[in-house]
Amino acid sequence: MRKLNKPKVLSTKFKEWEEELELSGNPHPVYNSSTHRFYKDIVANLLNIQDGLCAYTEIRLCDKGIVNDDNWKNGKFTVNDFEFKGQLDHFDPSLKTEKAWLWNNFYVVDSDVNTKVKRDKEVDLILDPGSEGYYENNYLDYSCSSHYFIAKSNLSQSEKERVNNMINVLGLNYGPIKEIRRRFLSDKFKMIEFGLENLETIIIDEFPTAFRICVEKDN
Image 1: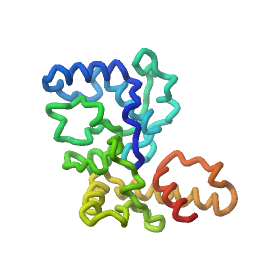
Image 2: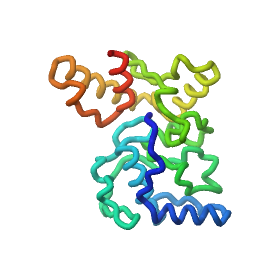
Image 3: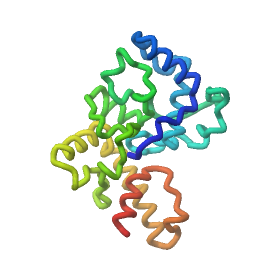
């Protein structure tokens, strides 16, 4: 789970609306998901930042080309037939009632992770991928043999517990995705081992954090 560049705002019409809403001091309108006029813009902006991947598990949700910077005009996303997997998630679900449209609380994530794993569980900002203080190298390690994420060994015991809890909450080791990740990475490393690709030419369009950690451990 990589650090995400949340300050990159392409959906400027939405952001202006959100900032005015915040300045008013009033509760946000009820979250009505895909029926909201800015829903598509929010999702497309997030998927642009996320390279078309789930913000947490890094499984692919859409072709990153469809959400590139060229498909925006005057602060609006211009693609009409926009197809993607996943759902818009409120990172901290406790904010959904009063602050339902906070930009900094939104990510696009795998639907099963959102509805079956994370749901409305309490979160710890230690693994908020868009926060200023988050950087994956400081918190996450990856077992390249068992294909699961774990807390870094150099963290304090309390930090390890917090990170491992959030690894579970965010579904980083959710069984079906873990298996897809295992097969994806195994195939990529076999291609490198057999000389069909190398680290400069191979395309890693899913699970880049796990791949990078495994490469660094092997060098």
